[in-house]
Length: 345
Image (cartoon, rainbow, N blue to C red; front, side, top):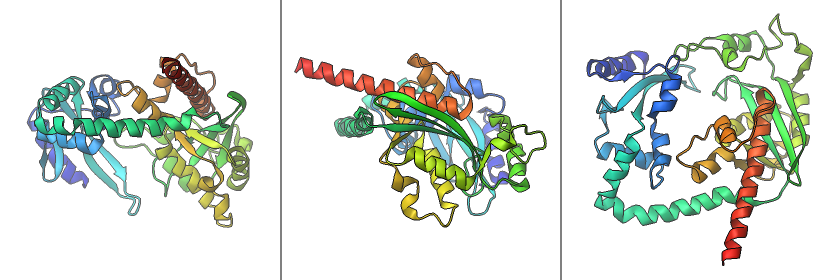
């Protein structure tokens, strides 16, 4: 939607006493008291996908559609945010309304579905499907293979315009972390990329630099310019790190495409030497814990704190170490569970 279109719906919601939440001001309030559809979906007694949860929210009267846009129906248990994503093709901002509901909606939906005959008929099928998906997600973490935990710091979410600044890694062999490090990458950084990095987002009221705090080598006050490695040299290092290993991310869906894109930018690198061709398999701890602990936060630091894993470094390296240690913890838990199950049987 255009800004004018989304503003018209925003004004209508405000006229009807709905609370508008501002990501720049209300982040703590949002994370503690409100849930988006995806979060509701995994916190239900029977975990659903986002599409089915949206259908349930509509069927049970928690949201409706105005001019093709979904909006909440009750200002007493919901709120909304105006957000935007950049169109990859045009570069223009696409604005949208994000609905959020108070935490209490989870139990309300559980009750509605338990009394719904159609859902009761589908429940066993959904449970079986969920069990199969869960087993597939956890199967990856049950192996003792060597792996490398990766974390990247990037300037945004546009594959066309944003870029990786740093990559942290932790290599695990024989269930021990044997090597760690962080690479600062000069991905053809120029003044245009610097301007994008410093541009303040109108919704979050911060620039990517405000979030990452890493100074680019083009900035006059950068005191570590010599630490940035040109893209081709960085790719040679990354190639050695990940070749013939499993790769584990916190969120592979968001981050892995950026690493793949980094390889593709070097046009004379054979396709057989690119990311998905040189690694063994790819794992995602966020997805694993969405199934193991669906009602808990799946944010990296929350996962670590919940399981007694301390953050000792900074930046991408800190994240990579957390990912590695959480993965090792998960391996141990799966092994213990299998061992107990065998003992019982």
